[in-house]
Amino acid sequence: MVRESSASRGSKRKETCTAKLLGVDDANDTREPDIVDKALHSFDHVLDVIHDRVLRPILLAGRALAYGLIIVLAVLVLLVALVIGLFRLFDVYLFASHQWISYASIGALFVLAGLVIWRRRRPIDSRK
Image (cartoon, rainbow, N blue to C red; front, top):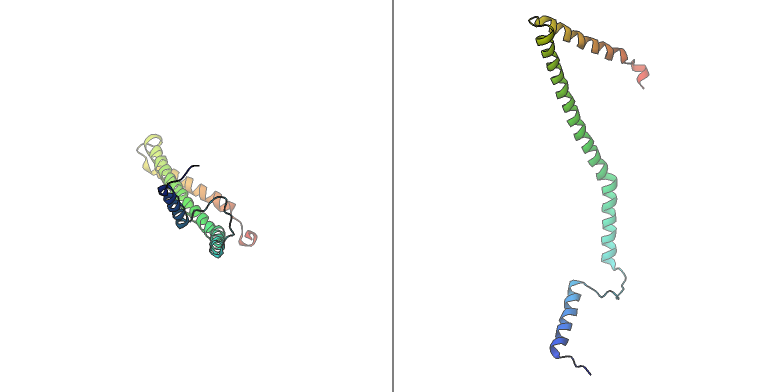
């Protein structure tokens, strides 16, 4: 017959007391969820629903707005650089020392682009 010493029995008691204080239960011990568990689960569910239905669309709209603004600004910078480069090309290589022809040709390109855009518009009645 094996006899346990009093020191080993005391350490087992300390382990079980510590486990109960920390909320660690034995795996074989099944228990029903109490009112606090149910309330926290319901609160967590409500927060998930609020996040999915309210906050997620707001976050997506904010991202779309930010990325759209970045894309518009990048396109604007590229268009300005393209116009400057086109003017330099006309002024230096095509019409050297005839700057007025460069201004006139770029102005004509802008007028042509404006006419194309104006032609594609629709009357107010057919926009709806």
